[in-house]
Length: 459
Image 1 (cartoon, helix red, strand yellow):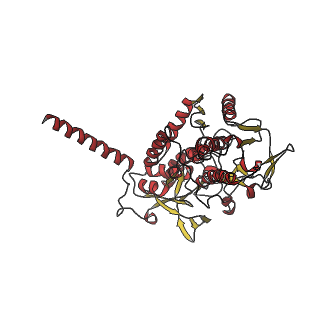
Image 2: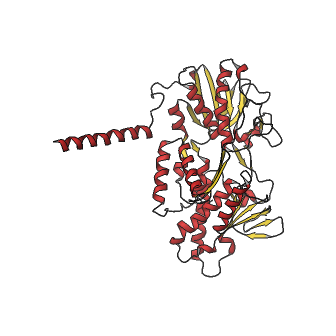
Image 3: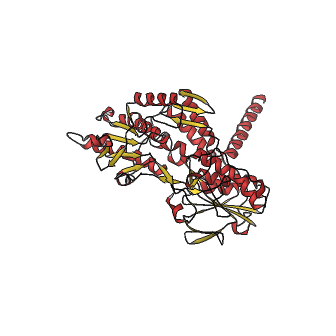
């Protein structure tokens, strides 16, 4: 009888634990479906355009601050209904991370937090009437936050837009992976001399995205594809990382730059610094030193500019077309309109401009929310200026090596890679994504990633 009682208690404990885990992975929404007020019915309306790091963090912070209030409504309007967790995008290339877990459901996260969401692209702003026009519909606002993100900057180099693949999101990462697989399939059918251009991959831009992308291509080739193509020597694949500056990863400490470069070289990735692409054609990259690289596979990660849509909105802009804002992130000479993230030329609070990265956008979104509420409540004298506080930089170069600079502490190697994974895993908003990625990483210790190409996606 005692054994049965103990077994029953143990089983009950397991059931309780599983129930708690299920609730943690599936949090309850702020409003029940029949209780959710319409955005138009709120007395004070905050409209956020853009669902990236800046827009999402602003909306989420606002819903947290207004949890006990029933007069403030928040709506996010974005062209996609998912939030891309940028730091993990390069991992899609090697299939280390599933794309579905990087593209997290934006609508669900916002609705559960108490906000509203509509998928639409902005067309114009009527600042007199305080409405935004998107997809033929008007969205009213009392305070408007623009977080429209950025776009690739090709610097006027001929052929980049036509012949290079960008690395701007989930779809781009999948396209790069599919291109590598497609090249392996093509070469496996060739009987004779294989053109060098087929198996040469050139990544232009050696910031964090470029470095991680080059390393993920290496992992895809050597860890995932090599066993599936026994007649193709993976060492024939050339991966070249080009950088116009004299160093890679210019945003981190020189010692970490050297460690990163040594790791890339150990992976047989050719690192070429101090070189600029002058022209890209269908089968080569022409460099400013007069040399050429024969390749049909170019990945562009070298530049960023504000979203071109900002040029059509009639708002004050700087010479780089970034929306000009004051120290509180309010658009210059435009009442009730704010701008954050890559689309804004935002002061960093130290005499310069905040960098166009996810870390700055996240801080701006988080910091702007209290000021929005103060403005809605008529307390503009209490606004607090924005100050960018860089926390650090984490760059993973392969599954067991990273270079990290966190709060002035610099470290690299396996420990840095584990820290990278733990830090970003906890930053994911979706509990389901956290669980799935953690399981994938654990299984990756024992199993080769399954890599497939979906026809038609490499276009």
